[in-house]
Length: 321
Figure 1 (cartoon, helix red, strand yellow):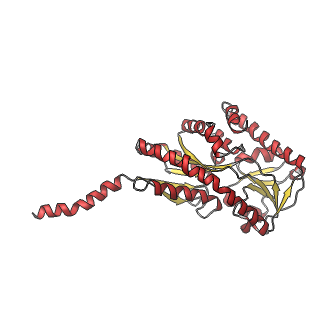
Figure 2 (cartoon, rainbow, N blue to C red; figure 1 turned 90 degrees about the vertical axis):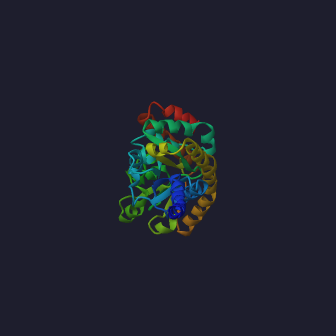
Figure 3 (cartoon, one colour; figure 1 turned 180 degrees about the vertical axis):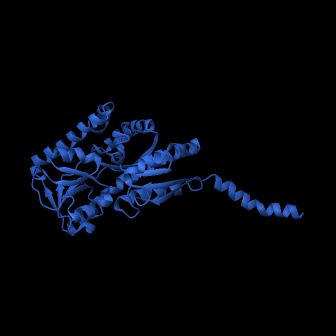
């Protein structure tokens, strides 16, 4: 009888082990810190996934660049050092040049979902041993040049030292500028020290921190913004088939569209923050704007044709035409 009682007392603990065994866990590192303005969508992704798949899949957001340098995220998830990362696609263009193509468009997340672009990118990522789970999109966001000194036209940008990321580097070279590739976290220090004259990024959530260092923003903006969710192949294969499909569908059909729609409000806030910080928006003339946008696209796609000749035309048809 005593043995039976002991066995019964142990049952709850045994049951807890069985339940716990069903919950798979992924460690996630992102390209920006948790409190960064860019991380708003990342937080929603983590919170919504953990709520939807509670007891089945848990994403542990360990942090950002303090854990893994942004430009090493893709390699880290590929070799198994990390289970999951969220990265700018251009940050791993050395591994997969076609990845940064997602920036080279003005199409929405919905349009790119419907025309098969993301499905093609999944295939290209798989060839490099990466699982592309989906995109954290910000289709409405554009990349702007922010400067210490005023410019009035395209020619004024010649010779400017600008912080860039790989997707926009060809544009800056075509403008006659001097590009310097740096992660987001190093922009302020580079401006403060005079290492660069300006930088390129979206206009959301950071202006108050740069007050006095940045004085001008160039309009129009160019390209589109999106961040890729990458998963280690072995970690992904551990999940049951049904859970893999449901997780993928939930991100692509629910979370990503909601995040994409939310950016309109954030960008309006960004406009107000620029104004509050005393940053003046420089509007090029209409003819200069058209010339600027055309130069940006032409330079980027020319580079894409050089780096990914087998797929550049195919991707351009999906993204631009």
